[in-house]
Amino acid sequence: MTRNRLLAVLLLAAVGVAGCTASDSSGSAAYAPSAPTQAEDSRSDGGSGAGADEEAKAEAPQIDQPGVERKLIRTASVSVTVPVLSDAVARARQLVAGVGGYTGDQEHSGNHATMTLHVPSDHLDRVVTQVSELGTVTRSAQTATDVTEQLVDVESRIETQRASVDRVRALLAKATTIDDIVRIESELTQREADLESLLKRRETLSGQVAVSTLTLSLRESSTTTVHDDGDEEGIGEAFRDGWTAFTDVIAAIGRGLARSLPFLVVIAAVLAGVWVRWVRPRRRRGTVAADAAE
Image (cartoon, rainbow, N blue to C red; front, side, top):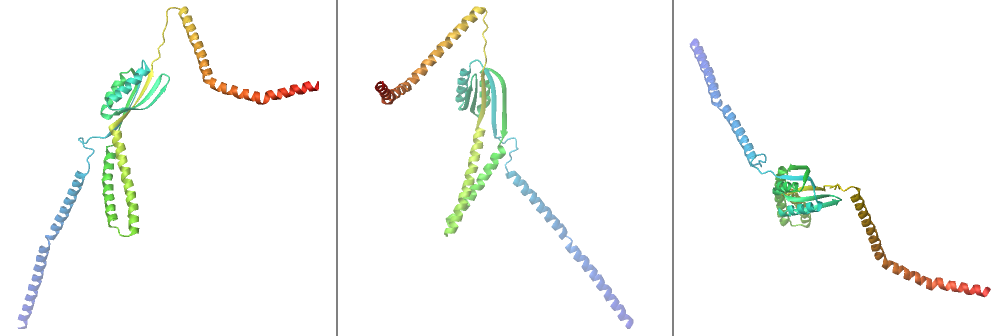
């Protein structure tokens, strides 16, 4: 009997151990799929993050794409030797006005002139070609500065600043105390000033892109006439030059006297008054005293 009971206890213990083992195995099998699920979630999150990055890149301005119009500030400089300086200057002005441009600074010095011409950018090449035909080109250069990124950045900042100004204005409309109103108005003034600065920056860049600057340097060619008639014609020319110089001097003296005549009349009148009022009476008194002494 005792032996049978011992066998029964051992059998129950074996069954219990087997049950625990099976339970552990089934539990492990039940929880095993959770790891792949987390991995899939991680991959899913990673995929969505990559998609978000790609979407952000797609929304950002693609200024490096070939189809995007570049914004260039173009300048040019041309030096030309011309037969007649005055004619070349007048012709250059006419060419610029013909394409809707205008002449800026201008400087003359002897047989040389420098002009700053402001030309619509789409007509710059045409005007450069035309002014080059005024004479012989001695120097020509062009530069182009890409300001596409600057304009894109300014546009973005303008939109952001406008939204900021609108928010501050909304806060000002809801303000109820004097302190709040004063603080909000001060902030609004500062933000509006920043917005105005950005707008002026955009206007300046856009103007420089739309209108190019052409610096034109004109120099009149020196002409020397060689005569084959010998010294006689040279002496005649020298005499004529001397006579012209003499007449110019006489004319200059005459003009100087004519300009000085009103001053001379006034000075003579003043001196005459001094003579009559002071000098002449003294001389008379001196003469009378001398006669009395004799």
